[in-house]
Each structure stands twice: as C-alpha cells, then as structure tokens.
Length: 453
Ligand code: UD1
Ligand code: CA
Image (cartoon, rainbow, N blue to C red; front, side, top):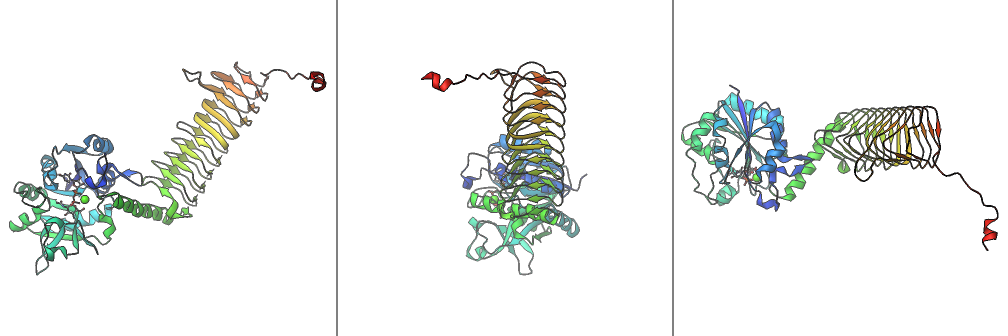
C-alpha cells in the first residue's frame, strides 16, 4: 500500500470568478490552477491522484490529462460531498492528502513537511493552517484552552468571537483514510450554506476521541485561495516572483523581473540575459549565454547556447548555437534553424529546416522548405509554397545563392552551389553550380521621353 494518495477538489463553479469556464482551469503563469496543485501533490510523493470534477468537467478532464484519475460530483453540494465521490480511491491507501484546486501557490516542500508531521504525530487528521491579518472568507481554526484544535468554523457560520480568530483553514489536509471515510458518512448539511462541509470531519473525529492537529504554513502566500480575479492576479504576481527568483538564483540575468513573464516549466541556462517584456511559455528550453531581447515571445521553443533573439516570436521550433534572430522575425511551428545562422528583420519561417551558417538577412518568407548549409538569401525572397489549394515543398542545396526579390515556386529544387539571379521567378529545377535567370531582359528605349511628346 502507498502511504498517501491525493484528492484534488475541482468541481465547484467558482461564481465569484464571473466566468463561463471552470475556475480551476484559469491559468497562473501559463498553467491551469488545478495542475499547479496536482503537480505539488505528486512532487511531494503522493501516489494515485484523483481529481473531483463537476462544473465544466470536460475542461478540467482535458487540463489534467493522464496525470490523474477523475471522478464526477454531479451536484456541487460542498467540499465534504466532493470528497465522498472519491471514497473508493481513498480506501486504497492508508492516508490521503486533500487539496483544493483553487490554491495554486502551495509548494511540494510544504505538503511533504505536513505529510511527515501527520505520520510522526499519529494524527487522524492534520489541517494545514496559517495566520492572516485579514481572515475574511476563510474557515477559522477553533482551539481549546489547552490550544488543541477543536473544529473549523466557516466564515459564514462564525459568531462574533470566532470571526476574530486569525488562524485559518488553508483547505489542505492529511487524513488517515479509514477515519476520513468514517467521518464522511456522518456529515450533515446543517449550516448556513446547506452544504456538506469537509471541515466538519475534524470535529466528528475529535468527538470519536481521535487525535487531530494543525500544521502551520509559515509563508501564508502559499495557501492563497483564488475565488475571484483580484486573487487570480495576486496569485499570478506571487508565482511570477517565485519563478523569476528561481532563475535569478540559478544564474540567469533577468533585467526587470517585474516585467518578465516566464512559465513554470521553462528551463534557462546560466549567463543568459532576459530583457524586459519577454514572454517565455510552455516547455521552452534556453541554453547558456543566450540573449532574449525585449518583447520577444517564445512558446515551446528550444534555443541553443549563445543565440541572440531581438523582439521576435518563436513558436514550437528550435534555433541552434550562435544563431542571431531578429529584430522582428517570426519563426512559426515546425522550424529547425541550424548553428551560426542569421534570421534577420521581417523574416518569416514556417515548417522550414535551415542548415548551419545560412543567412536570411531581411524581408524573406520561407515555408515548407528544406534549406542546406551556408545558403545566402537576398532581401525579399519568397518561397511560393501555396497554390490556393495545396502546399508544396522547396529544397535548396548547400552554398546556394538566392538573389534579391526572387520567387521560388514550389515544388522546386535549387541544387547545391546554384545561383539565382535577382528578380527571378523560379519554376524549374536548377542544376548544381548553374545560374538561373528567370526574368525579362532589360530593354532601353533611347530618347523615349522626348519622342513621347
Ligand atoms: C474552503 C473551506 C474553508 C477554507 C478555504 C481555503 C470548506 C467548507 N471550506 O472554503 O474552510 O478556509 O476553502 O481556501 O471546505 N468544491 C468542489 N465541490 C463542491 C464545492 C467545492 O469540488 O461541491 C471545490 C472547489 O472547486 C474548490 C474547492 O473545493 O476548488 C474549495 O471550494 P470553495 O467553494 O472555494 O471553498 P471556500 O469557500 O473557499
Ligand atoms: Ca476557495
């Protein structure tokens, strides 16, 4: 048997978000809230995660993917009722960690420390708590004179004395599975919201003579619950700070961390410099000594050592060592740019393989193409890859020279070392080492201006 399983509560509508979407799929630093908590739980060592879904369940199921099993809570009758839906899964392990899908800032370290404390103390239930200057909206931890935890009272059910309590329920718990199952079967909905509160299980277990305890979370930011978009923005700000600090401490220069947006899964090498306004998303990986210039956006990009990128967008593509990109280049999905290349201003690439040392310095479009090494593209080259119905491929060999303002009408091949004269529209294969000129010859009409009169 595994020591801990994990249950994530994610069925609620989240009315205060005023959204058509499930609350827990709203993103914090690019990742759905439910996936932040799920990730922390799994990283802390929980096995067999179960996510309780309900409102807009298809969105939550899609976001979670294969990371966890899902169970449905058809009607949202409260957090206790949500946990009841995962009875079978809870029964499979000795202990269970319960987390809310709307608390994205919890860390694996904190959860792990709480799990260890739960086992060490032999508690039946351990609730993670924190002290807040303003506890509005949160459940309060009611302690007895000898300071032991007695029960949790929800904000809406609390009396004047209880509302003064600053120690709050974070919504994270560790339970002995069998005790939780026994308490769940005795929950009632006798409260102001007529819901089955998970929080009531503590008082039930206490009544059974079981040991219940609290684990204090030192950094109360970790348990910030996101119920509205003000809190979502706050979570975003805190998470951004945490991510940026991790990179700063890891040897990355982030010139203005308050204006730099790095997703949680992005990896950046040492001595890389990130300028203001940069957005790094998805599974982007950046090597050492790179420069990511201002206002660049990288999504699922793989960037080699020493690459410099200025005010450019790169999506689902790789750029190798020492290549220079931008300003204002747009590298669309499916590209692989080699080492020591130049992809200059107003160059657009799509599904293109570009060999080492190739230069596309300015105003060029290359789509559905395979380009060799050390090719030179003159200004204004267009790969004409689309005939209105289908896309075709262009192949260019090593050391070819494509003159300015050429059209390469796909499918077409320019073999290695071939030259294309400026202004050509190429429709036929160009042999290796040949010069192709595909334009009208210049005609001079002498004295034309005077004769026209
Ligand atoms: C809950 C706690 C409160 C605690 C706070 C911490 C209860 C009764 N109250 O209040 O003590 O201080 O979290 O953030 O537990 N959910 C379901 N099904 C439901 C209801 C809720 O899956 O029927 C899910 C929600 O999607 C959400 C989580 O449970 O992810 C918490 O629900 P929410 O309504 O936000 O509870 P709070 O009022 O914040
Ligand atoms: Ca909440």
